[in-house]
Image 1 (cartoon, rainbow, N blue to C red):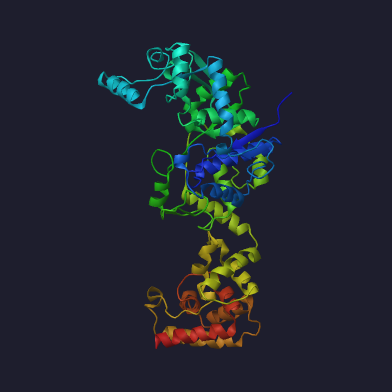
Image 2: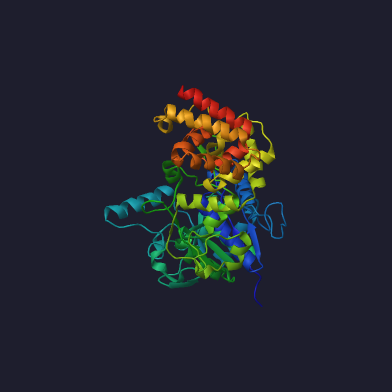
Length: 503
């Protein structure tokens, strides 16, 4: 009988959630939904020295904003709770003991100073010290000590760790759902610590135990965990548990050069690498996609295409379309270069698909912050004229300020050749505008073009000063649409201002 798909995203609350982590969460979510499975979140907070206040709440808020919330997690459908590792720490010691009892792990009493000396001695000879089958039988551990000596050390409270007993010179072969067959030789591995002297498990033990107890069927994670894969597979086999299927996702690379995308890249090139704005208790501040004006569906779309495609040229996907198309076999093995400009393009695509009413409702608070009081219907009409030129709602004011406040300064470059002839054109335009009965874009256009034609004038000689009068510069959408929206009275006022500037 095939098990129902269960996948997890298991972040550590050590700071803001990096966009690479968001993509890992997204791919887990898509895989779960595609296979009618469960997507759950487990917080891995066993390393209390790296715990950052606020980070856990940030993780959940980020995923909520993006619309990829878990089916199970802390406080939600806790079928396999708790979903926080620090609340599960009572579980792990028994599993470490189980490995010792089965001969798959051992007590190690070596002090940090003793191990440091061994490393330095090896370095002097040009070697690297590894705690593994080639060295462990000469060290201070229960493999070398008698059962009585080991028990005596334990009874006396001597500090110890529990290490995994790596098999000597075996080949570990794993079928990875992204990388296909991957091989490791155990002679290159060390005997990892599974249980620390402070009574807490290491990541490796806690991760495997939790994935087993929470019935994880597929482990979809970043390629940085690939070196841990042989140990994790050996742990499953040592416990006699079913091994889940693994898939290691490619890195998200810097926009320029090689290497993993970092916060420093975002700071240097001026783009976010976190979903939400982050402010640490130490005063550190990092920008977020939400606060930078990105729509969550645009972020989901561009992240999905970082390292995955469905084999077509299609670029715009709704979340249901992504779920329908997603297949781990289509994930690339090589890293995906991050392109901030392409991300803006995605946001533009989602912006122009939204209704003018929805965008106007988002724009109104920005206008209010600038002390501009206007109504939704007028704002909706403005948005309809400018949205094709915008990537973000926050671009709207720079594109449309003249719709809300009359220009008080005219662009020097646009007016440097203005003269009395220009003034005459504007005077005539005033008369033309005043006579337009249906003051809408077609009516205005007909009247102005008739004036130009009847007087055999160059189009630019009339249209350029008209646009600058209404806008203050040469920017903006169709000038007749601008005039129509401003209204006759406002248009005549603005032409008068230009005439006064010429005089």
